[in-house]
Amino acid sequence: MSTLIIAEAGVNHNGDEKLAFELVDAAHQAGADIVKFQTFKAAKLVTRNAKQAEYQVENTNKKESQLAMLSRLELSYDFHIELVSYCEKLGIEFLSTAFDSESLSFLVNDLKLKKLKIPSGDLTNAPLVLEHARTECDLIVSTGMASLAEIETALGVIAFGLTAKECEKPSIEAFERAYFSKLGQQALKEKVTILHCTTEYPAPLWDINLKAMDTIANAFKLPVGYSDHSAGVNVPIAAVAREATIIEKHFTLDKNMDGPDHKASLDPNELKEMVKGIRDVELVLGDGLKGPRPSEVKNKLVARKSLIAEKTILKGEKFNEQNMSIKRPGNGQNPINYWTIIDKPSNSNYQSGDLIDE
Image 1: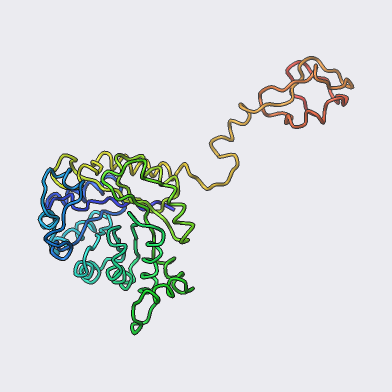
Image 2: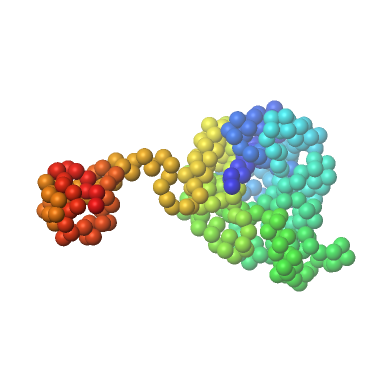
């Protein structure tokens, strides 16, 4: 199955609608399946006193509140509609992450999205997670900063949202029952993909821990992908080799632009390189069946060896270690029969270099 590649534009449009369109173009030209943005009302996302993350201060060279920074990065609802239309025209899927209830409602009820992404920062935001689940959309759940226990709790909330009756009251106990129920597990398998993620920008290689993908898959028996914040393209390509079903990666038009995420993003050429690398890895992974591949069959005769008469052997003369050897080409007697033939009389006359045919 082909890996779903999400080109994360995020807020790398810097609030500029022209840049947003250009980001869609770049994602499409790179061959990504989805271009993803972020939908939020800054005032509903952070308080006036919420401080920037260290990487945001470093990448913007500006110390200000998150509210001030994010307010410049909002995209209007009307412009979202234009973006969706433009994506449809190009043939690339539009996706956006909702960071508040109002934005989620807009994505589902107005834009009619059928797929949603729950960001790592909201994994423990149970009310918003529940709202996502109740949309009955397919859910991509990112797990940066999370423990297995926190992931399981979030999955319990989702299982409840997908299966509970309207009259059933949300509670920790109800989430646990839903998660461990047969119906809840089936609903999760139908609707949820989990993304392993390291929430740092850029994420240091020693903290990537791709083997955690296996741990997540074994723990929850759900499809697992990878949301990458490392520098370059090597890590997401490696994640595909470890059977990631989804790859999400930030990209930008120019890493030197002002903004919190540009420096940890790919440029358009790197995005193309990543997509090609992922598609190449999918090809080389193959079907897992071990046997001669079509391209190598013709080389059997050249590379393998046969039983050969090392010197003249007369009919009735016994084969021995001196008059018989093993050499190329491989279109004669298989060398596995060496011990079967030794000490037996020849049925034919052989000249030096003849293939032994017994």
